[in-house]
Image (cartoon, rainbow, N blue to C red; front, side, top):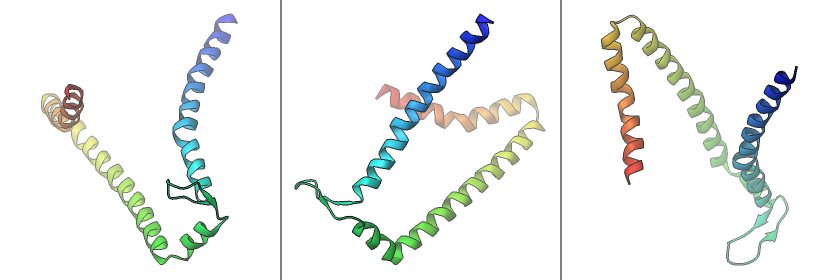
Length: 122
């Protein structure tokens, strides 16, 4: 029984670290940007509270809707295409010789290794 409690405590510890990182790196910047939308600020003078004016200007701008549609299209297209391409490559790799598969996987992953190692050297 004690072992089960210890495992749960360790699991909650790992989960709490991840949740705190998500809050720190994702949620806080999103909320701060949303709150900055209520101010007019040029970084030199103190911020001036202008209520919803920035958001009214944003929703009246036709380029906002065009960029929103382009972003949604890009997200859907890239997600769909990368999923289909990865499934096809995985299927094809399962059907070929083991050594040829190892060489192809190495060639596919080699640019990622080079990028990380060259960044580490610099």
